Length: 100
Image 1 (cartoon, rainbow, N blue to C red):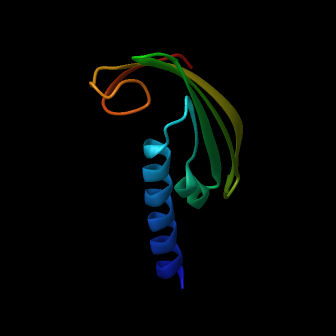
Image 2: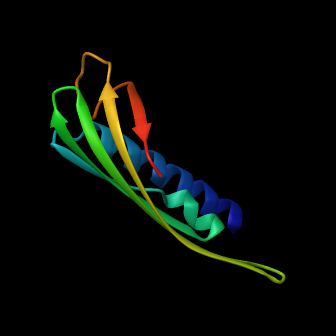
Image 3: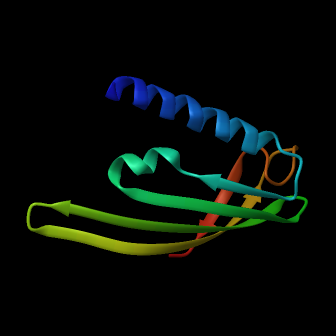
């Protein structure tokens, strides 16, 4: 049962990533589906600001318990991405610049 669930999550995350990359919009919303396996949620919003660059904002949340150790936290990750490919922003290879 767990093996089937993991395979389903992998297929779903792959298809979601392909659909996100093929959209012709000026922005993308991305969710990290596999992070749920380690009790973490992370999502990202990316917006095109020029023909070769975007801004991305990532949000994450985690809650975990390991014996006596409890982990709880939030994260915000802003990123500037410069796309070096001929396809332009939101597609292809990029150079990330992040601050956290």
